[in-house]
Length: 290
Image (cartoon, rainbow, N blue to C red):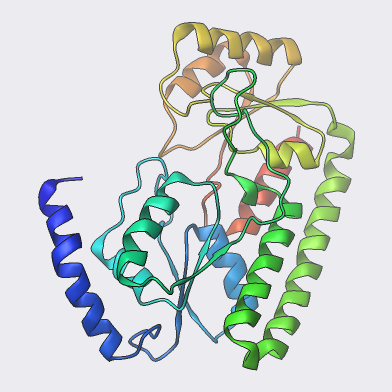
């Protein structure tokens, strides 16, 4: 981050925060109280539960890359003006942002949306025994139910007066998620044990849910070495993988080059899309249409 940006954050930001406090701590300009999430799929789920009671802000815009995310002054102000922050958990930028913001607002309520989820490790380095947590918990419908549950509990805690509304919305969301999960199970039942390819290993939890095997061309999410790439290509060919998922605006073009040897169907996805259910359906359809 450029030096002048640090100066803005640490000198101007506290003053702006103080001004925002004057027009109502935790309130948006429109008068609704503000809560902030980290990623768009969280926003999708939280808005289903919160209804029109809250103004839900999101740190990451649609299509942004969490690996290179650098919060703007507006994002930091939105977070400081929030009643609560629903972090997704295990994404590195979250801890850095919390450290910055809580200096000015130490009483900010922080809720980890991934609490209680059985976490997967060892997917992002390509080295056996690696214990780095795979953060992509939201790419699982089962996990989405747990994320929604954590969000529901958080909303009731900070706003018990609207518990009945949140409970009604939450139950409706759970019914929708159960229906989606059952539909995917039915479509993918005959594909259990099959392998698929992905550039960045973002579908580990989806794979676990439906008995699939994920092969990542670049576990570290960057340009892969020739040796690493060839090893993954050989694994994919041996496993008979028929689908290769990639993110057009984020992934390296190495993915399409590698597919010249593999011959899989290329499927463009965006796991961080606000239209979370639509993305999960696209991923499931890629298998059922083979």
